[in-house]
Image (cartoon, rainbow, N blue to C red; front, side):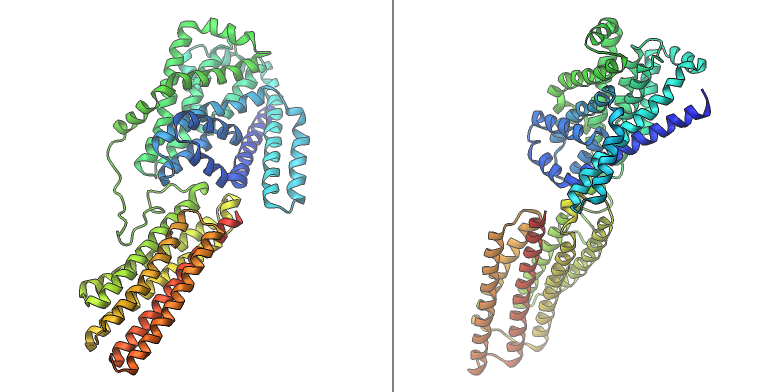
Amino acid sequence: MGFAEIMSLCAGLGLFLMGMTLMSEGIEKAAGAKLRGILEMFTTNRVTGMLVGLIFTAIMQSSSACTSLVVSFVNSGLMTLFQAAGVIFGANIGTTVTSQLVSFNLSAYAPIILITGVVVSMVAKNQFVQRIADIVAGFGVLFLGISTMSSGMSALKDSEQVINLLSGLENPFLAVIAGLVITAIVQSSSVTVSLVLLMAQQGLFGDVNICLYIVLGCNIGACTTALLASLAGKKDAKRAAMIHLLFNVIGTVIMFIIFQIAVDPISMWLHSFSADEGRFVANAHTIIKISQVIMLLPFSNWIVKLTYLIIPGKDEKVGYRDTFQLKYIGNKVIFNPSTAVVDGLKELERMASLASDNLNRAMNALVTLDEEDIQEVRDMEENINFLNRSITGYLIKINQSPLPIDDLQGLGSLFHVANDIERIGDHAENIAEFAERRKKTGASFSDDAIKEMTELLNLVNDLMGQAIKVIVGSGSEEDMERMSAMEDAIDAKEKEIQQHHVDRLTRQECSPEAGMIFSDVATSLERVGDHAFNIAVYIIKRENTE
């Protein structure tokens, strides 16, 4: 085997990997947010979860990508471990689609597919069409890589050393280890199985049955990507990756025993509907995965419970009111473009809730003059400022990442949301300062003044509550109209109580100092209403651009 043949194999493998990457990334960018919604909606039980995982992986052409995504979903709280189990099981079947496509030898059409994708990507103006074109181009590159590898492998038949090496691979256990190691290195079982398939087509194995054991090893090696992705995550993320590993290890042990008992009858049966050795490997891969799922799906809940024994304990959770800590985008969060915006929105919701609580605490301090409340408002304002800086930095980071198109559109509006929430915190701090000023001057409010401020605060709280709901929920034009009416009611109420305040001053029913504080508080509350409405507008408009 000469240098040219080695280069041909390396080039083909490189093209194959590049093609899979282009397809996977193109699909995530084109429909990542929609696929995320599908995963959330149709994973309520293990059977539908399995079907979703199967289809999802068949589209993405990578069980490793699907499983890593599921790990990040579990880490973000978008999916439970029991839901994840079904998706992971289905992903193991979906990954066999790649080897089936490779076995049909579509390499002759690779140049046409590739040029079509490249041309459309270059001339298309629509971003979604460009991403679809990237997927098509990736498909073409993948089959061009297969063609190149096949050309290189054809020369292997003339290499005595290679023939002796592969012919000597008779130990089933060593074959499993070989498949495991190679897959762990290339981070894709689809690649390894495809290589084995092409070798089988060239007749390089002394006994083609050894391919069955290599495929088993590939299944375990495919767990590497998810395991690595989970290392920086929470315990549930690690458990999700462990589900994948347990499924493949248990399934491999069962199939290994079955092959040891009846490999020849199984091989004859597979050959009976396989046109060549390449189809034999592809069909074997599919049958192995389907058999494993049929055997283990009824025990999926037990496998999930087993992960709690292997990975015991709980994470140190960041509390709702813990200061100077990020709950959803902190150190224990796995960064994944498909869930990055969701994590950011959840952190924004937490920040908005803290700002709302701080506003009410400040208003309470204004009436009671409680020094502890005043100090707590100041402390929480520092925390809100920390969150604003951290979330803004995170949004800048993800804006530079390959986000799904739906998430990328309207991302800029989240910067405005963070700023509006921070301004609400500033108004809470201002009210706390008014409380301190009132305490120093001895200014007092009339019962009517306290009642009117309470009525205005209640209106603001209602609007703020609705704004917080739409941050991680969903909003419509009707919701915006309703909140616009609420904001108008706040404006009208502020004007009304300001006029009542002037009337009380005219009647000398309150002191000038108390009157100035009352007026400033009413203005601050009205502006909080403006910021709350702005938050809703930015979120709803962002959703409507998706």
